[in-house]
Image (cartoon, rainbow, N blue to C red; front, side, top):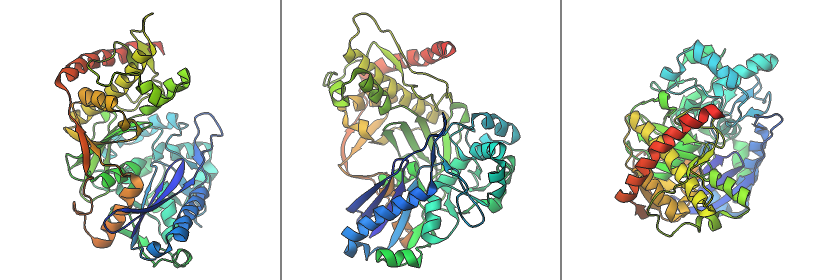
Length: 482
C-alpha cells in the first residue's frame, strides 16, 4: 500500500493505493483561505497539519488492515507558498500563497539584482516565492530577521511527518532560488533576496526517500515507520500520475485555470513568452508549462452572469462543431501569464452584434479558452518543444465539443483516459512507490488506459488558424484601452 497526500489550496486529499495502483480509499479535509487585504491570499500552516491528521485518521479508521500494510508516503502540494519558520520550526506568520499578488513591486527589484531568467528559468512574478520574501523584508523586517527556514507548503507537512527540512526539485524550481539547469540552490538568486543556503531545506529528487515517518505518528495510525518520498509540486505530481515522465509526453489541464505541461530532456526556458521551466520530479528530467488563469473559470463566469448552469450552456452548441464562433473572446478575466505576463490584462468580447445570441457567446468563450491553449502551445514550440499528443484532464474535458475545438486550435491530439483519478495525490503515491523500489521506469509511471482520442479536424483547424490571428491582434488592440 502507498499513501499520496496532496495539500491543495481548498483542501487536503489523502489517497491510499494498492501495489498495482488501484485506488483503495480516498479521504478529504477542507481548508480555507484568508484574504485580509486586497490581493492578499494566506493560510495558517497549522491548518495543513490539522487537515492531514483528519484525512489520514479517516483512512486509518476505515481501512485499518490496508493501512497496516503501508509501505511509503508521497507528498504533493500547491507551489510557491512562503512558509517562514523560526529557529524552533514555529511559523512566524501565515503562509503567503501562490495566488497572492502583494509583491508586484518587488518583482522589478529582484529582476534588477540578479539574472533570475537565465538561472531560475522564469520571469519574476508575484506568484513565485522569492518576491514574497523581499516583501516581508521590506514590510515585516522583524519577521524576516527571525526567519531560520523557508519551506514550501508540502515541505512543512514533511517536517511534521519526518522532522526533516527537505524539499524536492520540482517544487523548489517555483521558488526562483533554484539553479534549474544544475538542480541546486543558487547563491546569486538567494543573495538577491537577502537569504542564504542555511535558510533553505536540503534538496532531493521526487523519487528519493526524504526521511521516515516519526514513531509517534506511526503508532497513532497503526503503520510502520515507512519512508516518505520527496514528492512533487502539484503539476509535476499530476504528470507522474498520468505517466508523463518521458520527453515528448505531457498533459493539457482544462480546469479552473489552463495548463499545458510538456516533459523535456533538458532545461529549456522561454521567458520571452512567460513559459515556466522547472525541474521534473524524476531525475535528469525537466518540464515546461504554459499557464493561463481562466479556463473553465471563464465559462463559470458566463454562467454566473446568465444564471444558467454549465451543462445547459454547453448544450447550446451543436453536437458537432464545424466552424469557429463569429464572436471573439479574450479569457483574461484574472490577468494573464503565458504568453503576455500581464496581470492587468482584461477579458473582452468582440464582433458582438444585435442578432448575437447566448449560443454564440458560449461558443466564443470556449473558442477563446482554446486559443489561449494555442498560445501556450506556440510558446512551448518556440522553446524547442513540439507537443503533438497530450493527455487531457480537468472538468472541461467532459465536453466533446470543447475537446474538438481544443484539438483543432492547438494541433494537439488529445488522449482521454479511462475513468479514474490520475491527479496529484495519485502521482504522489506513485512517487512513494518509486522511492521504496528505486524504480523510476514506465513500470511504475505507466500511462493510463485510453478511452478515446480526439484528433484535430483539418477543416476545423484551418478556421481556427484564421481566428487565432484575430485573437492575437485583439490583445494588442484592446490592452491600451484598459
